[in-house]
Amino acid sequence: MNRKMILNMAAGACVLLPTTFLRAETNDEPATIRLSHGVLRYDMVTLEDDDGTTTDKTEASGFTTFPSGIEIAAFAKGYAVYAYPVNQGFSVLAGKAIGTNQEAGLSATLNTRNVKDGDETSNNSIGAYYFYSRALSPKVTFEFDINPALIMDSEKSTSGGPTPTTQEADGSGYSLYFDLLGVVPLAKNFEYVFGIDYNYRKVETKVKSGGTSNTEKSTDSGLGLILAKFRYLI
Figure 1: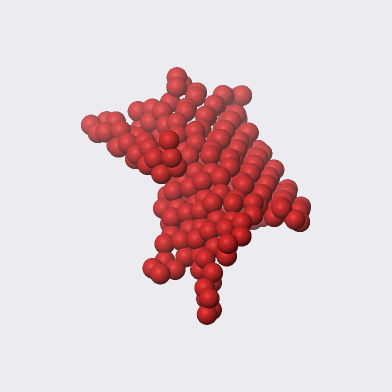
Figure 2: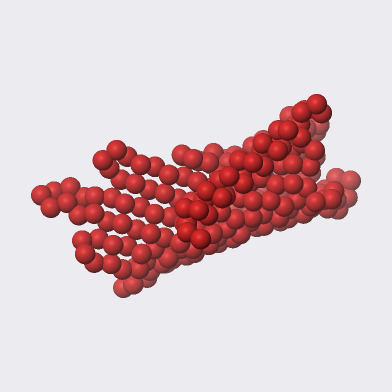
């Protein structure tokens, strides 16, 4: 099964699930819409790049106020769709509830950019997710999310000059994200979220340029302390 077929299957599945979600909403109560965004967090990040000759490692940490990225979620009759803004394409999770406190589904990120007579880039991933929640008290709910995914990236660029050189890069790898959260209702339809999250990404890229080729490896990991995050229910 080639990469294009896998991506088409993932895209089709993530389109069909929201369609099923919309059908489930028909002749029933309106869907619940939830908007989430970060306010304050502290991150500890490690970046490691290996081009086959030299290995560069960077470690960084610090606070971020109003970190970029929002989540828009919709729920109806046990179905759920989560969308995340990207530059092109889409990043989405779509799934269904299992009982009263679990949920599982598929995830996909499809982001392709082609410039006419220019560069081509593609950053894609497919995976699955699992969600679990449990009320610890009337005031605090525990949540756990995990999302493993396969990564498929590619890039093609041509440098100018009298003898143009074309460089092609084909990357593959995997990523893992999970979080442990506490959710506290502050008011009607308004929640405060705190906890930790962890993100790991490992990619191996084969680069071809001017008749030569080499393999580059990158490993990124980050542990974040979520000090303040807000959710709004509509």
